[in-house]
Each structure stands twice: as structure tokens, then as C-alpha cells.
Length: 239
Image 1 (cartoon, rainbow, N blue to C red):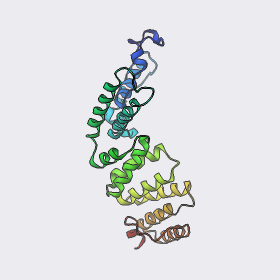
Image 2 (spheres, helix red, strand yellow; image 1 turned 90 degrees about the vertical axis):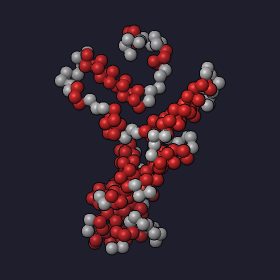
Image 3 (cartoon, helix red, strand yellow; image 1 turned 135 degrees about the vertical axis):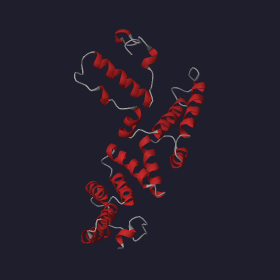
Image 4 (spheres, rainbow, N blue to C red; image 1 turned 120 degrees about the horizontal axis):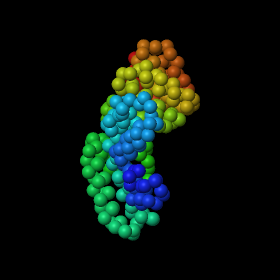
């Protein structure tokens, strides 16, 4: 960037100033910034071996192929509207982004692709990840569901539904202690919700703490839990 924008003067390079980078672009830009900081002696003792690969950085931040496809689709969406619609080579840009979206969508797994194709424009990437997590949960893909809701719980720690859904995925995986923690966090966020109490009861039952499980289930019923079948929790609650 220093070479392209001499002295960092605003307006010295209009192209770079108006680039909206994708995930890899941000990673490469961060790498260039790190090189500049090291070259300027501003990071004494920094271990270059601690640099993460792009794949590892994505894993740690929860950034995925779904985010890339969503970003491309939303760019296409914006290009079709004011103030971009009708600008120079607008139709070419729309065609390019449509093809890019199609190519990136082909990299998604079948459940991600089905949710992605059904997602109307206007939501956010977080809404999309929530729907994908629910779809994984309904399909019994508990490991993938837990991955989705774990990232969402980090990004949206104030939503009891996310904690509850993550807890359900953990129940499906047999990770009852973690499910208990998720249920208790959901109860903290929504003390009057019956769902988190039922989840807590199932987690406690899975841990063999039957008396506590019975108390939690009784509280869930008091708060309005219905008798509607729950194939995931019922086997634990009915023991």
C-alpha cells in the first residue's frame, strides 16, 4: 500500500481506496501491515512463526465458505440498487458477481447450499449461520450444528436461543457437562424461558444427576413447557 499510495496521501490512489476486500483480501492486507510493522522495528521480539495460515485464521474466527458466498451474493444485491444501478459497466459487474456467487455456492455442502439458496436478500450472515445451524440440528448433524452455534455464541453472547440451540447440539453429541453450562447460561439470559430449563434437565439426567434433573424439569413445566414430543431430549428425560 505504501508503494501504491506515496506518503499515504488521501486520493493518491483511487483504486486502492475503493477496494472492498473479501476474507482472503483482508488476511493478505493484515500480512502486509504486519510486515511493515516488523520492518519498522515496532514489534520487537515478535515470533514470525506465530503467524497463522489463512485456513487456521478462518477456523479460529469462524469465517467460512458460507461467509464468502454470502458476501458475493450481497454484493450482487447491492449492485442492482441505487446508487450503483446504472453506473459505468454496472451490468458487467452484476454478471461477474453472479458467476462468482454461483461458483462459491458450489463449494458448500448440501445443507449449507439448500439454506443459502432459500435465503432472501436482506438478512445478515449471522442470520444465515443461524438457519444453517438449525438445519444441521434437524438433520442430526450435531458436530456441525455445534460448530455453528459455538461461533454464534461468541459473536452474540446475549441471545438465549443461541445458547439453547448449542446446548441441544451438545446433548446430541453426548457432551452433557458442556450442555449443562450452555443451559445455565441460557437460563441466566432468560430466567422465565421453559426451553433452557428442559435442556438443563436433560443435561443433568445425562450426567446421572436424576434428582436435580427432576427439579429442573418441574421448573420447566411450571414455566409453560408443553407435552409436545422432543425426540432429542425425551430419551434422557424419560429415564
